[in-house]
Length: 333
Image (tube, rainbow, N blue to C red):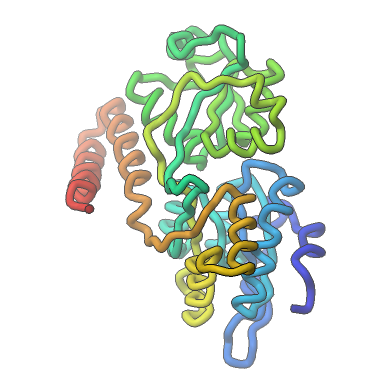
């Protein structure tokens, strides 16, 4: 390829710059047959680019070599900006956590081609609430809703940082964080974890994946944290492509992910090490149906909000959506 991803990592633009870019940027140059010669791959990162870049760089280099198209990486923790970037065809492929993946399907012509599996073989993870070790803060104190604590939420589009704790913990108890805590701050998992560990925040949302990466990269921070609540399993992240991407290129991308790190030999072992650094063991074939638990969480939340507002039409719509999703789950093997 004309340029290595290693060099491009240093000049990747910020989320704001990408979101503000003109839609004409598109897929870059095309070959004579209309197939893109360059695509942008987005990564919704809870960590900084400096930390995430070296972990993803080997995989993206391998992807570029395998599919025969230049791959430009784009790292950001601004979920909505990257959803919009895919919507305007500034991003063609990306690694999305579950809720943003669903938003990309709904708003940005996104199509799921694979889901991630961690090193222990699990394709789910959990949302958590964390406090500083030794603080004595309990879940009952958090739920007391007496405005005595400071609280950290995730991005509004974060599955584990916002949707799961609201659906499973706060909404069923009629708790609105902005009314119950002294202050509420929205940040990524890493920033919230550091804030709790150093006493800037009393409690925040996090997730089990963040704990893995903190244990690896910042063990001194993990030692200062403890978990006081854990959600039911949440679908892991997935690989999303624009549905209108050249079909042949889309299939090469799909094949790359589904075969990466599989098989025998030195090359397969090297790829498995690349995956292990990301806390993955493989990419498993998937489509948008794997996100049904997220759809169910959203429908459940919409039902509670409709009931609270007294909007009977909205209640009926939410009930119908929830019933359909639950029926689908009951017949899924």
